[in-house]
Amino acid sequence: MTTLVVRGIGELSTCDARRGAAPGVITNAALVARDGVITFVGPEAGLAEHVSHAQSDGEIEEIDAAGAAVIPSFVDSHTHLVWLGDRSDEYAMRAAGATYEEIATSGGGIRATVHATGAGTVEELIRATRARARRALRHGTTTIEVKSGYGLDIDAEMRQLDAARQLGDVDDVPDIVTTYLALHATPDSDRQSYIDDVCGRGVKEAAGRATFVDAFCEQTAFSVDECARLFEAAAQHGLRAKVHAEQRSRIGGAALAARVGAVSADHLEYASDGDLEALAAADVVGVILPGASLVLGGPPPPGRRILEAGGTLAVATDCNPGTCYSESMPLMVSLAVALGGVALAQALVAATSGGAAALGLADRGVLRAGMRCDAIILNSPHWLDVGYHLGGDVVGQVIREGRIVINLAGEE
Image (tube, rainbow, N blue to C red; front, side, top):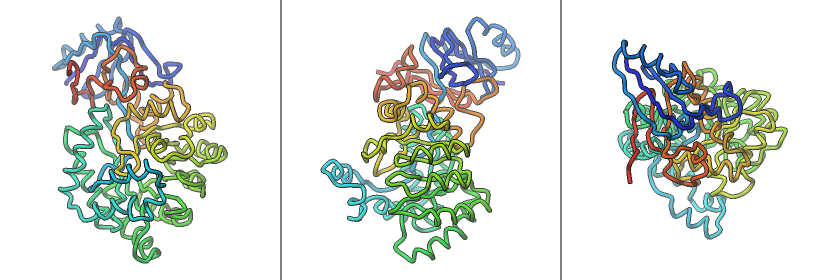
């Protein structure tokens, strides 16, 4: 057996609700994992017994954190990581005053990425995506959700899912959870025939490639009834729903998410308090995407309102080529505080255990005995620097399933 021992931890933020007030900090702490699973989290004074047992069972790797803080690694529960092409010109257009809708009408937006990505081979998609996934890992993300949605063609969508799944088999990127974003951009062809194809062949072929199905429920995209039809068809193939809801307007996406028992409803800037209460009552995780909120303007991400409604909050990057080109979860933690009105401890929990909940994963996001050992050793003695050091290089070492996969400690 392989045992990892991390000692000399100044502040260990467990994000474990059982430890009391968030984020469940233990000072002068240590962490032990055997074969990727945590066996001990607590004061270093209790470490000796666990190390002596491990010495008789196999190889031990010891790390001295030298007073640095340790937190759970991030679970990024909403990305569009697989794409080809470039939309930097849209950023300049938006800065000059163009709206999201004006850019889309002029041929930009999601449709521009569809044209570039749809013709890509699996190999081309893997090459383009691997660099982004690697950067996410360097920022401390060890589990990441990746959506399709840039195909407007069933075969192109499946290539995106295949690329994401194959990329997840390599060691230098986060674990990947795939989502079939079946209804994203509206088709050039007959709309009804397109939706028929998605609800038939699409969900059938995606069932072996994805865990979730998603839809952009929006005035300029797909209606509540169209999305509901998709979710009903997908459920017959074991695909749970996720919903892009109330991002640009309020048309009923959040209420739909509550009604179908979606695993998450994402964006939610235009959601009412009643919408958020319905999501909480249905145990649907509310995912805020503060980077996209910042770029697009409009109402702030409703982080505090989700918590006040009694809901579970997650924070994610929404990494995509048009409205949030960022792989940095530490930056999203900062923006969740600055824009979403949540406390820093709440934002950290939302970026770790909240993200795991938004992907239906019960084995990670918290540093507790019996959980996967996914953790970050920071370049700081203070866990608060995750959000306080805005855009800073806060990650020192990244541990995924009990192994050091990124070691930036000491780099200039």
